[in-house]
Length: 159
Image: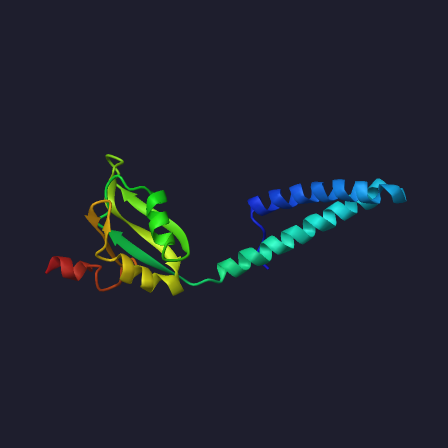
């Protein structure tokens, strides 16, 4: 089981406190001690963590595909690009690249989508107009690791 993230733990603690309060009022007529009430609250919190962990692990099993998105308007931000692609399916991540020196957007980026939705997003959004620009959408090429053929040896350099 995947370990819960910080957000899940905070939610579980909140649910545990709420569970404790509910248990206290619900079981107050039985005059049970506070240790039992606290245990009931912790049990509710543990159930919440389990449910959130199962949900997170199911989401982690979804296969994704990264799409290259080019010819974006420079004013477009991650939110509007995400909204555009969410019309086509599940979006996990949007990265729009910026110039290191100026901090201005470079007009392209990457969208990580569910594998099942990516091909239809390419078909529908490639060559479509978005904020007065014609988008170029295709599967992103993976960064190539520096292979041994591209590294020059000393004997190559002396020739």
